[in-house]
Amino acid sequence: MGDALAYVRAVHLLATLVIVGVVLFRIFVAEPALGCLPSSNILRLRALSRAIVMSGLLIAVISGAAWIALLAARLSEAPESFPETLWALLTETQFGLAWQLRLGLAILWAIVVAGEDAPGRNAIAVGISALFAATLAWSGHGAATPGAAGYVHILADMVHLIAAAAWLGSLVPLVLLMGWLMHRGESAGALTAVLHRYSTLGILAVTALVASGITNVFFTLSDTASLLASNYGRVLLAKLVLFIVMLGFATVNRSRLTPALAASAVDGAAAIAWRIRRNALAEIVLGVAIVMLVGWLGIMAPGEPSSGHMH
Amino acid sequence: MITRTIAGAALMLFMSCPFAQAHAMLDRASPAVGSTVTSAPRAVTLTFTQDVEPAFSSVRVEDSGGAPVTQGKAKLGGSRNMLRVGLKPLAPGSYRVIWKVLSVDTHTTQGNFSFQVGR
Image (cartoon, one colour):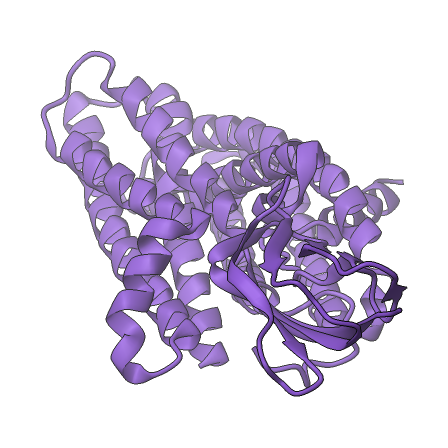
């Protein structure tokens, strides 16, 4: 049952990061960068964005429901008490209340997405999506840290989640958009514009990830002495390695390939663009692996020599 | 230079983890773990390392014969990481506290300890 819970958490986290990333990407990267394209293309972009968000929301809601159901099953004394355990979990715990809030946000978001384009809609979309990512923090370590320090910790967690969506989540629409632009034979200029804006978003996101990470270091270090001696520590190290490699690909794309694309002649552009896209795909694969690890980390105890301890 | 910066930043990043979960361990207890108290306590107060959910937490106190000596259910004490349960008047002797908590980040932990009420 622990496995199922880890998997479901990872799926939910991934769905959340991608749909939030799609919104941030569309509003801060794609539309500003491609403003020069015909409006029919912009409408196509919006339609694609809408489709991804709707399907992602569905996956998030289903995995969220599975998450709380698995938790309630684990906490039930007996199979017969499952319904009342689930109800108590939903209504009497912080996790349950956060779950209800997030379900409400998901419904609201679906309504906004399905609705007509209207002024202020973008701002609302950014607000709801950021909240949807941030409220995941209420199921995490930061939510359980006692006292005033808990507020700092949970704030850092929220920043961390939004930043992860802005970087990893927006890689998905980046790869899709690049594929679409390249297929249509759009100029390197359009691609470069998108990549430049994405780089800015990426830098801001990684900075926020590191800042919130540093904040959390103090909390994690004060809780656990021997991080490396445990299964938890080893999984954390694996995450570290994956992230370093991911950042490596991103750095190559930003520092070397994007400038090369901007400076390239027409016949050389396609090859460079292809490499950038391939690197971005590699980042996505690594990012998904990180999310899977986070799903596992979430059910492990930091600092315990091994999980002989069943709960 | 860049590689080192990236490695350092990544290390920092990975020491953090928004989903890092910790289990609520017993931090302090009153009466203290393994202690002998001269007068019978009116309540047992447990302080944990994490905030807990009272709806899914329990504290049982039993005498040496295994009979429960608590009054009412465990409730939150002064803060969200503190549980308190009332006790019936206790005779001198040895008592066992058996606790089980759900931390706010949905992990269960349990444990037990004993204390003495001395003459």
